[in-house]
Length: 82
Image (cartoon, rainbow, N blue to C red; front, side):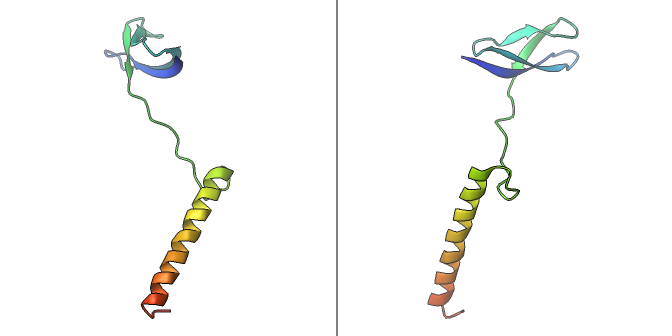
């Protein structure tokens, strides 16, 4: 399977991305032509649920928040705090 992987040149520290097969673990560096090795990349973006830019994340956050408020109110009512 082809994916985008990050590669780093060990001597000069050049970083670059390349769309390659998953079994590729080293490539020539784009800048110095030395062997660059594949490094562990950032796992993925975290969607900001509050901004509204990601509707499904916002919807999930809103539902979780409503459930939490409901549970807190129920706990407060059972303890006579409300």
